[in-house]
Amino acid sequence: MATAVFVVVLLLAGYTGFRSPSDWAVTLESVSLTDGFHRRFLVGTVLRPFAALFGYHYVVYAVAGFAVLLMVLTALVVAFFRASSVSRRFLVIGWLLLPTGGYLFHEVGYLDQVVYLLLFAALWALHRNRPLSAGALLAASVLTHEIALLTVVPVFGFVALWKLPFRKACAVLAPSVAAGLVVLAVPPAEAGAVQKFQQVLANAGFPYRADALELFDRTQAQSWQLYSITGVLLYLLPILLVVVAGFLMLHRPSAATLLSLAAVVAPVLLAFGGWDEARWGFLLITNFVLVLWLRLGSRELDLPRFGALAVILLILTHPPMPYFDGYRPRDVTLVGPPHAGGNVS
Image 1 (cartoon, rainbow, N blue to C red):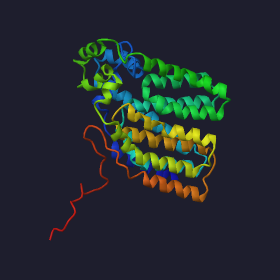
Image 2: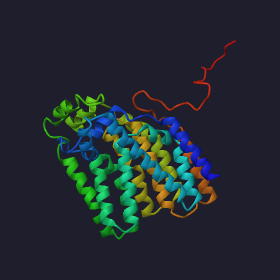
Image 3: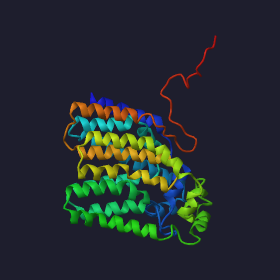
Image 4: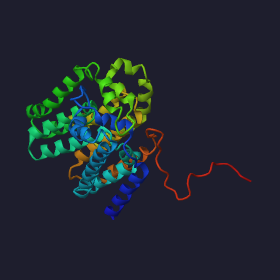
């Protein structure tokens, strides 16, 4: 029965949000260290030989984006079928039923998916007692996108501090922290790199987004002039209140609870990094579910806590999570959009 439900909700999430990688995502997938970019360069650097071979064609990046999405979905399937408790399976199903499920498919091609895939690999390496590999994989996530510092690094950090002696945990975290400090300290790109790369992409097989490349030419202070940080925080506030209250309802107060809660709420700070409020909400809910899943282990929630979790997930269906580029979640109906309300006779 649980397997059938999982398959249905996975298909429903795919139907709701599936799309091809956006020009914005593909543009950011193409930047590389070789071309003078110092942030978000890992994926583009790996793909650069293939891109150069095929004239920076869209298909190169689309195939890479769908391959990453497929690996993330594989991780979800493994997490569901290897879960040792009903509570863990319920979390996976719940996350797919929330707007986050469709948003996962809508985000195909975004570097966020690579960042979380590297987190899963780092956690697996840590579980297999390979701390050096775990540290390297986590550092790679920071070189993929600096938002790793506020999304996956806190999650990995709480697990490392939970499972390892303090000094060993700090040693495993050190490469990613060092990578983050370097990435944030140096300019996002060399002088003139954006303009030179625009010339490279001028004959590319897709309409690249100049505004995506302009991110590397702006300071953070200049970016703050383009949007309202307060507006983004106000969007995130209801989600934050629900996940914090819910997490505290499900766990007894302790240092471990506070540490794991910090990993849950860290994505809220992304409001100071950009205006993608729906994306930050997606990552906030994702961290909430992921940390709950990790904390559960093989334990089952008792009936009152299971009921509380169900209510929390139900509440989280309400915050809007608008899509990019004019897309919207597909309606689950056979008759098209419903008619407007009101009397017709």
